[in-house]
Length: 114
Length: 115
Image (cartoon, rainbow over all chains, first blue to last red; front, top):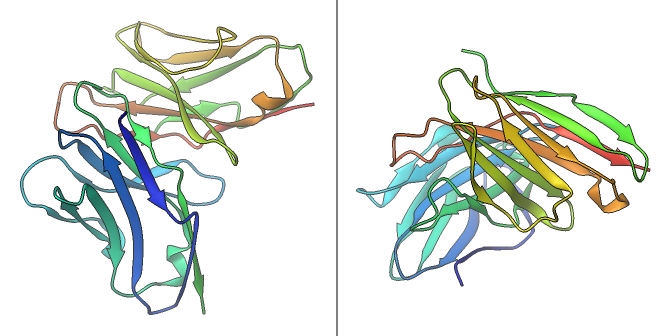
């Protein structure tokens, strides 16, 4: 079955430290991949997306993600965490044949410690 | 450009009642999707509408229904409310037609509390 998995429901990092949020998917065909961020009491906002082409994708707020087909992964990184990065992050996938049906991971809450 | 607008933002209902939530997509967006967000289940896909037709449906009981109007505005309805229906209901619109986009634009949600 096609699925998307986020490892770690809560991640804590110190301000200025590397942020690494993990996302893996299960599919024989590379899907479209997205990362969304949700701040408290708000909807979700797109951080970045991968559809085709370059496997290293840069997004807003200094975030980037790399699509690794061999590892079926799309991990989100940021070199230096800022207090304002504290939020919940969702990996999302559109599987082949699932036109406009977006499947979300369970989310990872990022805490940034001053 | 105005974003996705959801109304009401907050509402409280009692078990057995029904509720209707409204979503106005970004101008020009013809696809509207609905999601239920709860702490235990995360984001669960409810349904997606395009040009007044339901194209995709998630695994929710028939108490959950929706529709889309000719101006792309959408409503969802939940009948015979249960305590477990308490959740944040998120609406998202997208510019269908650009196959490689798939980007969803979310509203701030309608928070439903069932007592």
